Image 1 (cartoon, rainbow, N blue to C red):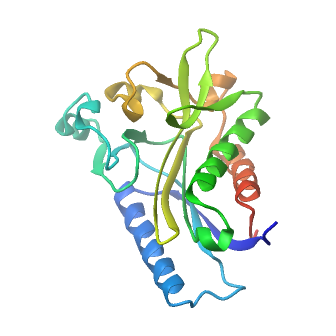
Image 2: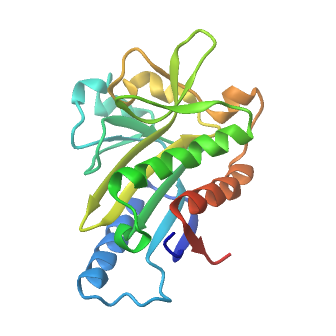
Image 3: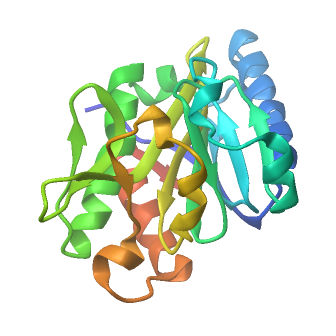
Length: 232
């Protein structure tokens, strides 16, 4: 097994999407440059994992379809929500309060993962976390993210995943509904699906699950599945 490399983890609390996207790109460009110039030393973090919560915002991936947004951008603005076209994979999704958003900006070559195994590690981290709450979450063939099957046999999404990788460096990531107001998803076809729903840890557990209790659990599962270490 490859030795664990060190990464930095930043819990930045609440931050507007545009500001955080700028931060992602700054970190991404800096890591790509260091990697290209072979300036990453063994004791230096091989990337940064951002943990953040956004005010209400909708994002549409590069392969997404505008028609999956069921209202106008003007209407979203009237509700206090922003809208962005972005350069990740996937379709349309919502970010907002009560949602744990994670953006790993990592050197996959240093970690020893290909892009498929990397995405599987993200998925598995959410599956492992859900299991701790007694929830049987799973992957769904042909669809990204992490899902739960309801007693009525309907698929509902717990976590959306959309990433970008270039030169072996990643950005964007995942968004897991912890205590999210799910009414925001009624304005879109989440991730392009018209026949599937969304859920949160709070709705699945029938109690309020807080970000404070989830964050450390998630970080532990994520670093384990990525086989990285971080300074506590």
